[in-house]
Length: 277
Image: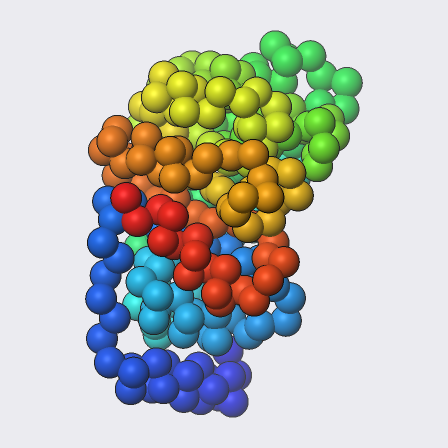
């Protein structure tokens, strides 16, 4: 950051501190956010101030450049990103060297910042069968899992829908992702279970989570349809889902990744309350 940016962050942090200590959230789940829940244009420091006040513990989909700002507000980089793209992930062997070169230093940076997780993406099929794509994803994870284990950082393969938002994305079914994790057989290679995406692809969310919780390290949330707030305009019962996750003793983070239609701070307050179980 520039000196001007550092001074701005410090000023916002001081203003937040002046409001007094924030009571932790009462629920059993540790909650985080992505920047999208604040809509477009809100500076990261301002978003962090709201998070600290509301008892949010961390931010997803951030990179090393964001770590100092999060630290100013006592927030954790709960999911680090930046090593691969949605369409060009790790299911094609010709991409492995490039992705590995980007991923290895990011693992070290995440560990140094106390970040528990780092995102991985299968990439699009581009003609690959599910069997060949799985073989390639497993082969990639086997190249990097020892470093992740040594550093204590979990690489999370994200489940995304290929029906609406990400056509041709390969890791679009829970069973496929679970089989990858079983074959890699590392405590530091697990799944990022995005509830919105898996509702579109599979439904039966609570049963699927219960049956596969040992392979899930992280959750993302959003309402369906539309990926907006989790209110009565959408079909998922997030209060029930939150209770089910909490009852499993889930130790990781539940992170909100919706696009608000209303005032973003008020919407976040309402969302956090749903997950206070």
